[in-house]
Amino acid sequence: MILVTGGAGFIGSNFVLDWCAQHNESVINLDALTYAGNLENLATLDGNPAHVFVRGDIGDFGLVARLLAEHKPRAVINFAAESHVDRSIHGPEDFIQTNIVGTFRLLEAVRAYFGGLNETDKAAFRFLHVSTDEVYGSLAKDDPAFTETNRYEPNSPYSASKAASDHLVRAYHHTYGLPVLTTNCSNNYGPYHFPEKLIPLCIHNALAGKPLPIYGDGQQIRDWLYVKDHCSAIRRVLEAGRLGEVYNVGGWNEKANLDVVHTLCAILDELSPRADGKSYREQITFVTDRPGHDRRYAIDATKLERELGWKPAETFETGIRKTVRWYLDNQDWVKNVTSGAYRDWLGKHYGEC
Ligand code: NAD
Image (cartoon, rainbow, N blue to C red; front, side, top):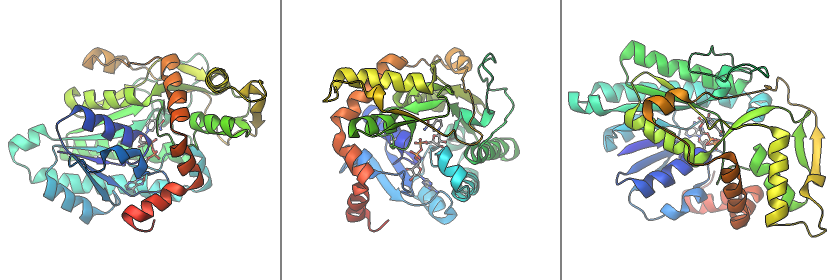
């Protein structure tokens, strides 16, 4: 049994789906179902006893303590977070509450649980904290990619709150001997991505005939990884990572935002052409840049590749094509998310949100 937090979000739900498909081991999925949590992502697991969903907050010490005592997981994987940079700029409070206070309370509950395990179970136990490359700040054009020894220089309330959570996780290892692992990953893309982030937003807007908004000059560079590759890296680190270590996760796919959108337009032009025969590129609109927008992120994943033999299965070209195909094939999911209908579905299954 493993306990996953935030398993109804974008990466967490991909992780839970892959885990249930590949492992003969149950998952308890603790998720508060904020606007970003969507149980429709997990609809294929309905009725599957290997997936136990619990609606709740990682900051609820009593609930987490009870779940740990009841299910005795051999690992906790923490995906739960407020994750959208723009939202953190307009309202940082939730980010401090979940990413810092929530992670702290979760760690406290896990520390108490770990302290009560016998020596064999202690030796097997892992707490894996999922984090971001944004904690390292921004790179200049010719800087080398971030390694695990880069200084933390977070620039947004989101990345600052994730940086704080990483430090807490580190401290619980050094102070209390909690067997922790941390992964810092680059930008993910793929199925079930909430359409507030660049790639799903552009696919959605393109098909809806709406503008494709590009911040500033569109030359901000991000390093992209297909979400299933992130999930495989987490499984690998969980299985073989050295305790207390940090592993950067990335696919060596640095792309300027504008190039990403051009690629999306080209694939959409081919797979779902506009009725007027024009390219979706016509819909690109430049908008005022985000305040404090980091210019470049790039991840050096050498440690994970050398030490644990991990490699991504997708290149950017194969992953982005699969992603566009997924959105085209799952227009109902997109419609439900963008119309808010998934909340009604949620209401029916789990009460009011
Ligand atoms: P997401 O916003 O899609 O999902 C977050 C999930 O956490 C949601 O299901 C939400 O309901 C849940 N949640 C929020 N607050 C909670 C709380 N207090 N208690 C319990 N559940 C709560 O985020 P994501 O993109 O799937 O990211 C998951 C993790 O991976 C985050 O920690 C994020 O920092 C990290 N990460 C994301 C990316 C990326 O590109 N998306 C890259 C690197 C790392």
